[in-house]
Image 1: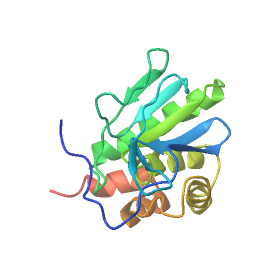
Image 2 (image 1 turned 120 degrees about the vertical axis):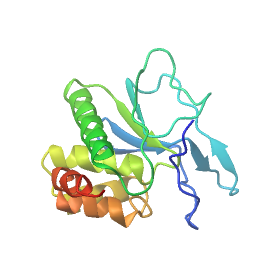
Image 3 (image 1 turned 30 degrees about the vertical axis):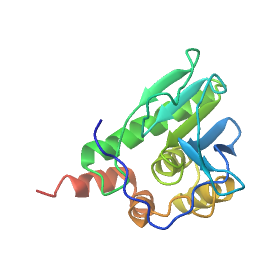
Length: 169
């Protein structure tokens, strides 16, 4: 398995396994922190129709009834191809919502990578990038999208960010 997660940056774990950001669209991670401060694994069974994973861990689901879409990306600077993956996954989430399917987008903690995909889905559905970031933070945690590079990608637009990333040698 390739490494896609940055080391913890002093950010506490989320206080819930997943949270609903907009009706039918949920954001979460593979771990959460219980009230005693202990990290707990999140195992998805069949709570969702579609699960989009930006980070995977064996034994964390989803169950057999859920469609599982995987697009591992790092919690770091993204290449043009990785930004296109984010766009594809955001479109997948939007299509699932349009079909009335409950959708979970998840990464390790459910803050940055999942936040980028969820926010892009919201932008694709008509919110401004700033509104999408506020919605993600209000729904998941004020710590969501704490990777400033990811919020910059949203502000610039993922198409522009991919063009600029493609210029790097």
